[in-house]
Length: 443
Ligand code: NDP
Ligand code: 2IT
Image (cartoon, rainbow, N blue to C red; front, side, top):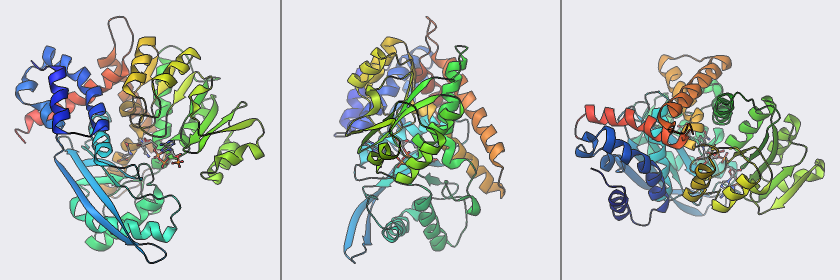
């Protein structure tokens, strides 16, 4: 029999000073251990959990590059290859000064379950660097990406490990990384996803995480015979995920009232329109300037969006951006659904508040899986040398999100009818990985 406390103590001891990794593992094993003890005691003997929390491989490397003043800069690069039981390692690269091993291990661990939920044959990984892209010139970004790839290339490959974007890594960075990989290997392959549509990328990949999030939220409401029409939505972040989540929410007739970044939050009492969103994209990080053009809005420097009254909250910025107090405020303001575009944006205490209030809480590993799912479709298109239309990719994305929703229902429905999407996602993702590990022997 597995014991929850003993197992968490073991993980903590093996991974000291890795709070985010421990948080992500705890959130998963709280659901897995009772399930394993009841239905699959053989997984304990096979040490499936002990193996799941140990990355198959972690690489850390020096990334030296020249800035525009010809000064040498030194950063640290990483790739965490967490689990390849169901396919090649797959997951994004994050460039942010906050990056460390604990954060990348938590992201890689989450990715294993998320990727299994997509039903595509992709394992889990994550990587990145403590490089800060803010304020850097295009040339500096390029030189950094080239130096980063000059080491990373030996660890990745279209059938080994396929990185993509995450915070601070978008189409521009994928372009520079891909160019350097191709040059070193003399090989044009699908080694990265999120490529430009003219050179091997998939239509809908930039939109996929935000769109998929809204497809998932739509399923939650449809399950209660409701629609998103007229619902008030609060979104955090103003990057790739937040932006396309806002676009899709608008197209479903919802009213989106906030977007944010690390400088603060824009609150627009009239809601954003498509035109306003285009203007926000143009502003870049200067969200504070938005009310000058649109006086229905106010800017709240240094504040998060969770104080504003909404029906649906979509955290789409970063980990642990929504804490217990934010959760309590959302619930007392009548929020009925929280769905995560970001990875682990809600703290463990916040999740408890949502579950106790019996509102719909959709964890990132299910709700934001649309991005990696379309990355998986990009890999398929690359391997058969084809490019599918936007409508075909979007249809497949809808289908994948609907299936993830069904998996969450199947494994997450409680005796009282409450749907615990976190438990559903944890069990649904785990079973596929555990059975594959069992079949492949002691590795
Ligand atoms: P981007 O770099 O495009 O945007 C990140 C946004 O979040 C920016 O607006 C940034 O603001 C804000 N943000 C980041 N850190 C903080 C912070 N500490 N406090 C306040 N705001 C912050 O990244 P993505 O949109 O791609 O990623 C957002 C989240 O979604 C991440 O958790 C990522 O792991 C997750 N995700 C991304 C997927 C993808 O396909 N891109 C897929 C699935 C999940 P600022 O510019 O001021 O830093
Ligand atoms: O967290 C995520 O799922 C991503 N950043 C996307 C990963 C991918 O491989 O597309």
